[in-house]
Image 1 (cartoon, rainbow, N blue to C red):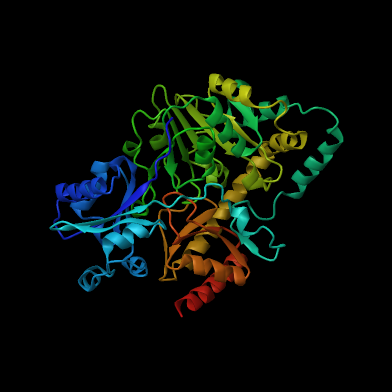
Image 2 (image 1 turned 180 degrees about the horizontal axis):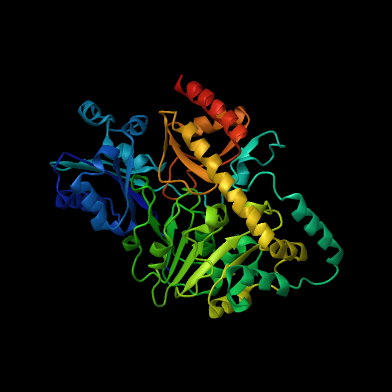
Length: 473
């Protein structure tokens, strides 16, 4: 599977009308002169106003990497070794190439190089903390913070579910028997039981997939939940990334996925972007010899579960993951499941330890897929949609804040200059929000906010106004 190579970000700038050939030639010459490989380039980066420049966009396409665009005001805050007053006057930043290369948080390896109409600089790509989860924002806070960092639905688990789980404690002397829960999950999705595997949350499922299915060229679509890539790396895989762009609303272009990828992982709706991809678009990613893993951990928070692939048996190689921890507040109990072809289920089950899911978790699984529970989840999803609209309307009042993509999940991804400082100030004001820079494809200007009730959102918006005012001083 080979050794890992340090990934690079190439910052590029160019005059209007610069050609693809000139940009590519400059980048290749710069890398070659520094003893670096074009194969190590993870992205090209530039100022937002240049992302539509055909020569720069075409160069990114030719290298087969994403083009990242940064607002000029963000790049202007980055200290560069070779500033230019003329460049600042023209673009708003003292060096497009060096500032864009450094914007991801890496280290500058090659300072600005010039050709007739182009510039470039090379930096290391930031290594994202794939193990960072939202709960890190509230741990040790002692309940003093309003938790907007974790996507578990508030006021859960409900009383009836707590009673069902408590009643199961009298059976702890017996080994867990998952047959009833497995049958209930199968019935909920209209599938034979041979297509269902119960797991200790979706996280266990990702580990099983990484270790048991023998992928040769795994591809993970980012930004998304980082645990799949972490599990694949831990299993010794070299992971390729398809990085979606904010400029495209984080929408997936199936053509961006390598044709020979034999394992593709994508979230729907995706954490943290909250984008809901069309089911038909995802199904079109299926290929002979490919496993298509769709993480639907938040699908039950979408009214009607539109665009769901769970329950489909006509998509070859489809593997759907579901979690019961988010909607029902069971993160501490660890319960989820996999839906896939029987052969795939068999391989995953063979990699599980004996009795992987506890009796209380099995009882919870059976209870949460019952008709009454599904109706309650649907009602909650519709309420979340209304609350999310209220949050988005409030965020739209801030000129400093932008939302990329159309949010369809129980969380919203926002971009704001000085996000790290804003997050710190919000914490001082009693609100914990999720940093975005640990997700590949995002940087320190992104924050994720969980959707809460209108009263909580009102208090958040007031705190956000205060935090932005302080940050601007």
